[in-house]
Image 1 (spheres, one colour):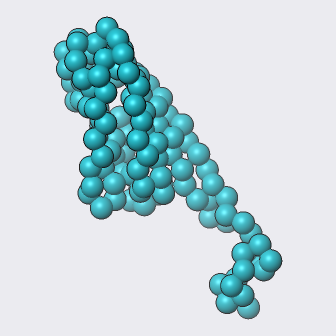
Image 2 (tube, helix red, strand yellow):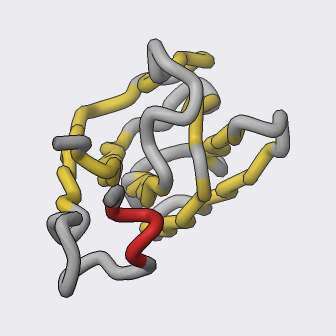
Length: 115
């Protein structure tokens, strides 16, 4: 009998789902840059994308997260602020910063581990 035919995860033969979290952080400089992209569509079921724009920056920093369906989540961060957004099924994250801007980004990615 298969796990799916029993209709049970923990009471049957299927182990509970396991999740893996990756955290990636770095600095950005002026210009447009892809800071993360997945090699396999659908590899991550969710991601949290955070941008810190230094208070000494000269303007807003814009982050774009594209999901598996091509939807774009925009993160616009004024100088001196940190903003984050969660996106389901992310595939790319890029940051565009004006001349004189600097700051950091952090990405938390979540995926299911298959046994």
